[in-house]
Amino acid sequence: MPTFADLEIDFPLFGADVSEASGWQPHGVCEICSQQRSGFEIGMGDYVESPCATCEAVTPMPANNHPAECVQCQAEVQLLRDLTGSHGCWRCLRSGRWASTKDTEAGAVTPVHALLGRTHGLPFPPGALADTAWRDTGSNHPTLAGWPVTDPNEDGWRAAIIPSKVLVELVRSPTYITWQGEQWLFHCRRPMKYAGPWGKLEFDAAAPNRDGRSLALSSAGLHEDAWQDLSDSAGECAVLAYMFECLDCRAHRGHWDID
Image (tube, rainbow, N blue to C red):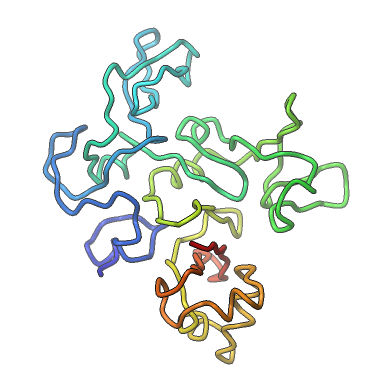
């Protein structure tokens, strides 16, 4: 299968085959711009830009027509139609006319969070999280996935403070397919590029001295049993490793799950 780059579609954070993109539709008429163009099925958690009736600023509104707050004036806004299940073209996604919620190692990011420059957050203290999610500077300033965090809210959650331009790029990218749920990763203070599901052959090819086992255990957190169960080619067994590449230093990170 081709990648988006092969199709001359500009999604720098998605390097895997188009078949790995959730809701991919090679053909369709976009519900937003009315153009016939490849794109994706608009789903739950997606947002569509529309003017606020109160302040007239363009703001993301839930595609399922649930009420929300305008990012600019906090007035209640509503799309007045349910667009879930319709076709949204790739150009409208790339330009932000619609965008998708992403789950990340620093917490969920809706298009609204992206404009506000923060994630939804994760529970605190660090013991409630995976070891790789939290970093400690050695002072009273904890970080989440390498980013500074807000004070805890009433439920003990902290949000990661991330520049809006970083998060906007993320929510304007396709979502990758998983069994148990995505977890977009960060490196060098930016989202990593999704490289796709890897099997043993891909780990061997990317690893120094072709030691794919060591790379899988160190970069994706696979334990020994999971590595033994991993197939040579991704998708041929009940274990899947979802791998990312840093756009700056080319380091690899990943996560894995079981069907």
